[in-house]
Length: 412
Image (cartoon, rainbow, N blue to C red; front, side):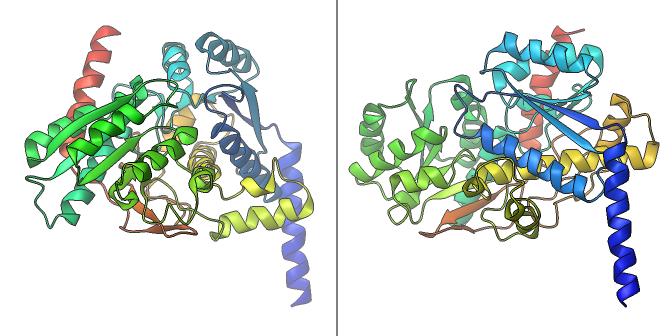
């Protein structure tokens, strides 16, 4: 028994040593670390680097070490393009900008070069259409899919009939905030609910006018499409206007910091569109804490581990690293962008052992299926209210195809 255990330890150590000796597989994370998205992006980068280090301790990707290169673009498209060109010269083939304007600006170059763009929860929603965006992998539900699933949840809560129900859409008045609106409007025509929109202007600190109108509307449900630091402002306005917090469902951009800034107990009953499991209970998070942070080797503040945005980054890069591993395993070295693209199609019902919704990537669907779930804050943690699901997929796909066809026509 002792010999067997020693042999296993030796094998693991040898695999790790071989991985460190081989040429690394590089991933370029050109992120906004200083301006608009600083409430979320640093945790995503921290998670990607932590998971890379964990995998490197275990032999890397089929014996190849992972190198995650993180640089700041400040949400400026030209700086993002400069980052892309610089890292491309260093041999990076997989890029992630985690910014809608930067992703859109870099997209033509990436498609022309044949490199891989990872685009979770940002950028073009129609990029899930793999037949048009062959080099873009969303690997997450779009905002359109999230909106459709939220309406599906409302319908189930209403006993299967939304006629006469009132849905208020409260959103930051930017392209991001307006993006899911076509889905809400289309489902309004299909399901017969009363739908009204309530924008609030950038920078988002003053939402009082929107809430005065919402109070008069007297909605059954409020959908909030905003971003982390602005969420507590919305919650306080809900409270001030006497609208129960359990009537609100947010998009995915909410985390525990937002909850605590409002008040954990006061937020009880709030719901969100979830794309990843919350908390630190999952074995993957526990492995990172034990093998990295307990040994002083983490890539950031330990208290951010298991933050919802950290978990989002961990889920995304579980998929990305697995796709590249499959590329190496099935097609061998040297690695090329085309091999990585083919490797992504090996992701079938992949959920990082229950950490996220299972995704299956196909040449037609680069999003993975669009599944989300509804989580509720119970006063101390997020609790799932539904299984992972995707509804109204035909309607969402029609919208995707219409938009991607316009892109394809304009870029012939």
